[in-house]
Length: 161
Image 1 (cartoon, rainbow, N blue to C red):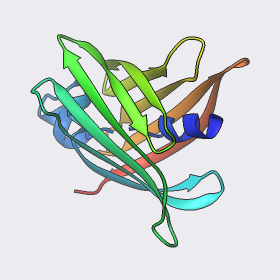
Image 2: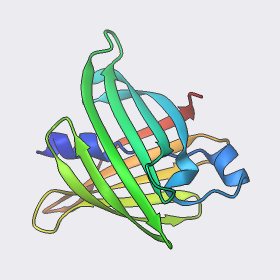
Image 3: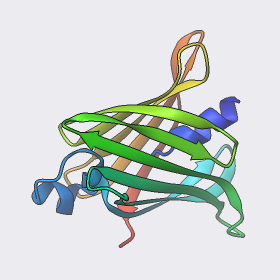
């Protein structure tokens, strides 16, 4: 279950600082585009990707997240999320190849999307998607444990498109 939490948090989704912020974008839609990074999937060299796109409605943004083995391209983990930004209240859901389905609750502040996922009494996590001034994105993931928030992954993404 913790592995699934760790993988989900990478979502981890997600930010296009240069273009989106310059264009005045905010919230999940500011992350639109493809992102790529070399990453470590719990000891396995991997490639992490995030593809953010408009959803089926004007207030929706989707993410497709994947971790693939660096050597062979084999899928280690995949997830999909839908964010809805309705009048500044950002919610949605996440589903992944580990079988998880989580509700999402997010806030957008100063070029960072902070997403809490899961439910009280069950698996919970937090993912922060921070756009940087140089146009990259840093994604940091935490799981909520009995000892509090524990960081399990940080990945620095570059635009792939």
